[in-house]
Image 1 (cartoon, one colour):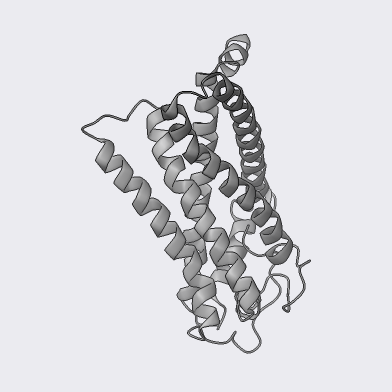
Image 2: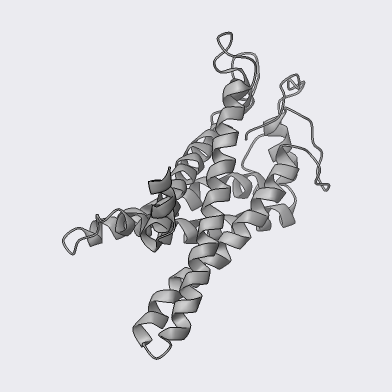
Length: 246
């Protein structure tokens, strides 16, 4: 434990923590996007939207071996811990970089290198605010402006994304996510020591494709609802399920 604490005190150790926690959060974001795409797969034979079934599965997975929602809460705790540690460590690194910038203000290369980091801070703050809003709207149903029924994920999305201001907010948030992921994935390769002149083009391409894919995958949901390209919720849609997608 003392060695881990000592390593965390170093800049390299902090960057490693940011990379590992970022990778955990990135994995969740990709999985969350893939789950959201079930909104496009229609209903089962009984008329239940597949995304509602998926949301119910998230709470019942592992039963009866583990209690209801147990694994979901395990995942949530891991994600919350990763998010808190990620944000806290980024703030510490930002303060350290800010202090170093005053010492190296005459070096133009330092200023250029710090520009992406500044954009990461901006996009990170926007994403934190969006996460809170997203949970309040689609998990707790505390945001007005559209009907909300606990467990009726498809219907909740349908009603919310027929409001232009919700659509605009989500598209802007997904643009911030894409910007954050683009630089974050590239930084991950650098932190892990994988960057190399022979491989950097591939890594940058992977970072770009990853960010574009996430933006298209997430933003397509509100946009297609708003454009009227998604069918209305099925009549008598089941609402016995509990909360929607994480």
